[in-house]
Image (cartoon, rainbow, N blue to C red):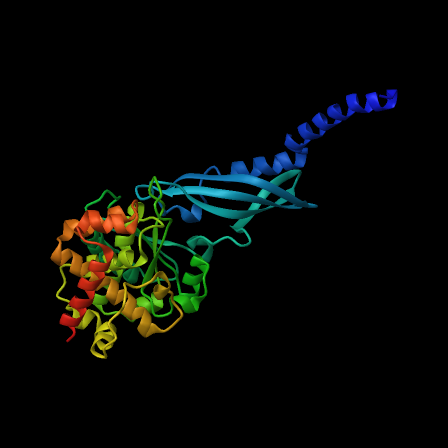
Length: 371
């Protein structure tokens, strides 16, 4: 081997080690960036005064990046917080914090949702707070009487959900009431058309431990169109989703999740299948008995409203059948098993039958109910 080649053999590993070490080392921060980060840290030690009525704890901004433009700067940060007494886990929000330099110091001038991130309710305006016995209602652009009425409804919904779902959960609900359908859609990051006609929806991850920071978000337009009994059903349905969240996983059939929530909402009410399942009743009387429980795509909004209604009604009547024939405890057991076992195993373990037999029993029950 030539002397040149031997030298290269010795030098190349050293160069490679230096390059790898450089890739793993964080880029040095200049003094201005450190000052900007410190300014954000000082500003975010306590929540803004305009949020004083909201029971916040664990409020903190963690800066991940800084961009400077002369005497102005933008810091990308992750906001973490809890609603005291309601959230078992912290909620997160990607934010952009704006700063300016004045007199040699950096000052925060405001913050907003980062591009592509969902806004917080308080980004839409001043937040009014109503505390119920089992609920916390936060609203923007709503009259105090409206928020108090929603809190009263939530206070009835929480015990109803607890009676249907004996599994562990927080036993309280957070309800957000934005100023319009469009504002609701902004909070959820979806087109407003998907929520038109709906009274409320629930946010949150499934199968989280500890329990995620769920929110029931009210559509003020749809809510105003509901009857008093309809409001009770809708809110109990959504709160039941909150109650069952930790037991719900990707393996839980959507029809079981939605049907259980409706079963909890109608449980204890005088509503009959004829009254609460008119779309499915019409279909069965036309000879259109469903061939199987509703699929996940059957619950998608924005399509045929009659088909969507049949999906929810069929899911409710399936859960109603299970509770009536095998007992409420068996329905709860099935829900818990479905989140941790294959569906066939869950059905056999909770009900002692296979899924095909359950489907046939449900079809026969529909024919008998709507003959």
